[in-house]
View (spheres, one colour):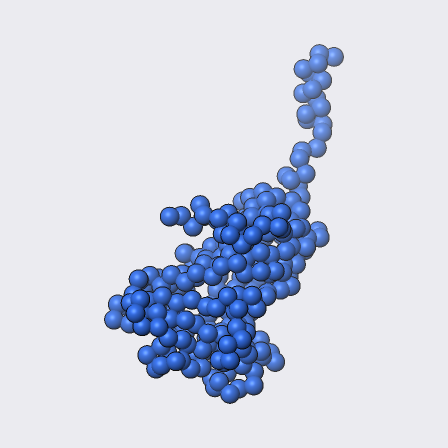
Length: 249
């Protein structure tokens, strides 16, 4: 048989690549970039777009179509309030305390290929509830209120600076509801969207001037996530640099 014809026959008879029929194995260490956004009413300025950008190290266990996701470390959390007049941040101690998971997830086939789905889940910050849907505490003396940053103040502390001159704090408990859906671009990358809602209560502040509003209007068209596979030994600085292009200038 002609060698070219023989190769052509083999091409038709042999099965296609496994990735065409099965999703890639996502087991391992990953870096996660998460951007959530909402519209909020800035004092004296009107509506602004507020974004929270978080970069974390996560771990995935993947068996069949089912997955479990764990947050191992939050490397960075940056708040952009849409104006240079206000700046807020949280303590590194709070970031070290944040752990999420295990979160159940799965892979499903879609017209665009294989998709990673993390169904709706709740994240509580600064509070422990008997049932995740219980009303949030409204008093600092409520025994359910925690002190995750260890500064002796109720809930987690939000540091606020106005015009670069006035500084203060607000003490907050929070409940986040999130869900993810992302296309598995390759065995090393997932990109998708986040649906989320935020509920928080300010329990107190260093001054009434720093009592902050906890509710905005989600901007889902500006929210997204990117996951990139990593070795697992990278520093936080390396993980932040890994997403430089995704965040733009």
